[in-house]
Amino acid sequence: MDRAIPISFTDTALHSDDAPSAEGLALAESLARGSGEPDAVLQAARIFALEGRRERAIELLRQATLAHPRHPEILELLADLLSRGGTFEEADLSFRLAVESAPDRAETWYRRGLHHARQGQSPAAREAYEKATGLDPSHVKGWVNLGLVLAELGDRDAAIVALERAVRVDPRCAEAHSNLGVLYAESGLRAESIAEFRRAIALGPDC
Image (cartoon, rainbow, N blue to C red):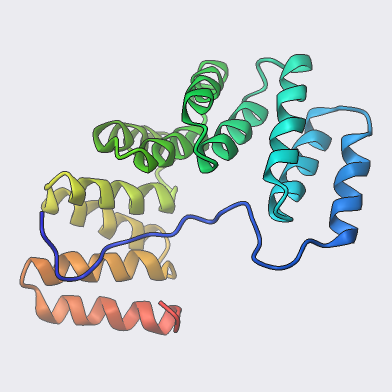
């Protein structure tokens, strides 16, 4: 469907635009050399990713899967970082293993939805977001992204319902208000659209 106004949602990425922190990297390396327990591995990998060392994080997580081959959070984080880097085939495998290990983990389904969306696989992304929001009805990003993919698939009414659910879950989500405003504008709901844009600007002046 054509739109005059872009509709978008920026997911929180595991990276920082700031220069790497020596202290952060030192802490991550210390954790990586520690006990090898899953919590320490995950903390180290997240720090590496936040410090712009995605490949180091991926390397650490790949090693961790040898000792913990069915740990859902390790598999999920590995899959997400691989997907963000464009290594989609390996990410597919890690996401499948993560889902098999913990099929009721909403965050894994949400991240899997992002993974499909990056590849332009809208029906698969919709299915994953629907699963995430079904498992966790309070997952605001799941509702926002479900709304966006439904809009991409041409189901504007269902997209509006999803985004309205997002703003009920988290009235302070500027992205949800902004995108809902876009859909209201496309539907000819001028007053409602302006109200949503105003809410978005009030919550996030840079929105």
